[in-house]
Length: 68
Image (cartoon, rainbow, N blue to C red; front, side, top):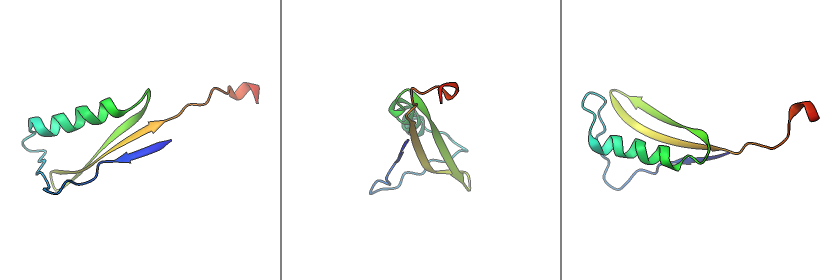
């Protein structure tokens, strides 16, 4: 399993949850596109502002538990 955390850019963008911008939607869409097959996107909000978008990719094994 690999985690990819978006690094802050030089200029922090104000992603308020009170007024959701096209830029924020674009960031979330890009994070979803970066998930390969299995994974998740986590959006962290603090004081009505998105502070972090975490992308998680999960590698599934080909083993069946019944076979172990």
